[in-house]
Image (cartoon, rainbow, N blue to C red; front, side):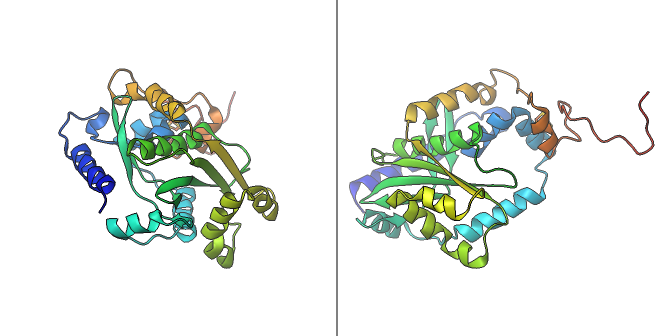
Length: 267
Ligand code: SF4
């Protein structure tokens, strides 16, 4: 393998092997998805650590759809290096890791398109039951942080762009699911995402962002205090978020009143 991959392997071993005191809740590494969740509600993380994850229909359906749209097959490091070195675009994902804002951050992006060893598109898929048009802060920061980590690992990200694809769940038939990852990659490479959105009116939105690592650094820095034990978690100020949250009926900070027992009257 080339010097780049040898060096990356050594740095990776150091990063994961380095003994350090844990972050909040004893965590050794902080998942990119957890930082993104802080942008929704930090108290949700507290609930997850205290009460465990609560399965929800939407989460399970989202996971199944992810696997259907972006099926992966494990390959060796050597095969990965060969695949992404090609000039013609190739599709492959890897775990990303790095230090930022005093945190050791790890994660796995949904999808990356490569050419000549460089990432050119970093893509995150988000399913929704609602309107796919808005891009939420947590989703934007998640893809930005993946981009930052990829750059910190030493990949040349000078040509890379970011995309968050928001898709209404339950909208694709089996044939479209099979073709999806190739279709979205092709549309991004050819600059035809608008055409793709027209094919799925109101059901798909492709949000394209410039790779700006400093924005990702800021996004991590503004949430690091929670993990470093410098402050207590902040809870959501949005009734709508609490209403949609799986912890709403048991969360002490919930702004959404639990349903009244039947027969209870207000005066
Ligand atoms: S119920 Fe509200 S405050 Fe509690 S975790 Fe959920 S979103 Fe946060």
